[in-house]
Length: 521
Image 1 (cartoon, one colour):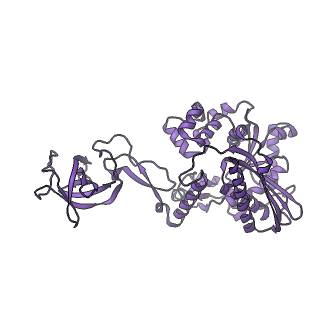
Image 2: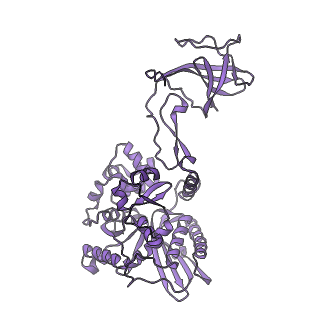
């Protein structure tokens, strides 16, 4: 089945505009939205000063000293986007929110009604500008993914021309940084290069998410091909005696209903990709919105979207000054008495590999949010992960990088002469422990300039601890580093030893002094 002809509405720099609409932050000035201490969106004025997505906060402020920084808030973005979606619905039907700042709909109906795709796009852009005083761009192509890329430049891709349009797009268009980095290291540069790989091999080598990305790169909108109509009993509905007119009460109701829906879908081996949210107020007003997601909606993800939507409905329609509110539905005049969740798109959930912290996506995102919050409180260096690279000693091979930073090794992993042979030690000491090594007669063991050992090591004494017998050893493994810089030169010999008490250590001898560098399991 060919991808559906799709029209995508995109509002550039939406997190910045949302901050202006909700919090009054002047979007005309240099503004950056931060998440985990990195820029995720910035204003045009900030870009003129060199600010870009992915920069750390300190570097962004160095490039633009006048930069105003605000924290990323998906709830704020969703509340501010609700009037935009309502404005689109005033002229067309069947709008699906892909994320705050972007919405999609089938292009055929509006094109026939307004006399063409270009005319439909112009009418939608005009409606958003009049009702919300917000600039937007529209892209039309075969499939949601391609239409979203086309919207970035305001293009209408002719029917059947989507594969050619996608072929020249860079891998970064997939919005999957880890996969993009891996593919680039394999020599791939464009979506055409990725699409040329066999689909079965991509799934086997890179996993489920990469297989979905591979379909997008090939010009196939994977959800319409895989989604089936859910049976009616998958819908969940809740009626409330006391109308929900507060956001906190609505948030609790959203989580309860989301967990029911997720449990129902899991019982059928399904997962939701497109969620319909329907609400009825005490005065009989009916509200409806459809949320679309690139992956599989977990219980937490469903609850977040329901909470954001209810927040947008209950707190009213924030708009920029000068916006025309004619034709836009007003804030509900009463609380919500009935809430229904409809899984309008589902996929078979079988065969997904659980993540390290539990269910795919859910616990992983919770862990990421928790670690990012710790960084926000204590600083980026408070949470680090180890990256293995090249080097001659175990300490040289490990680099600690802040959580969320690019995991690049400090040194290339090419073969290093003088590198310690496997196995690698389990514990590398941050500071070597002073030690002494003796032969069977009690004399200190030495190593000559020709790497000749004075005698077989027999006993090891670490600090003031009593000596322990050495039952096995190998070495020496010499290293002579930076001999051309006398102040930085380092010459030493390393030994691997096993002890009578069952321990195994990595020792080094430099300038006549023995020390313990690492411990083996």
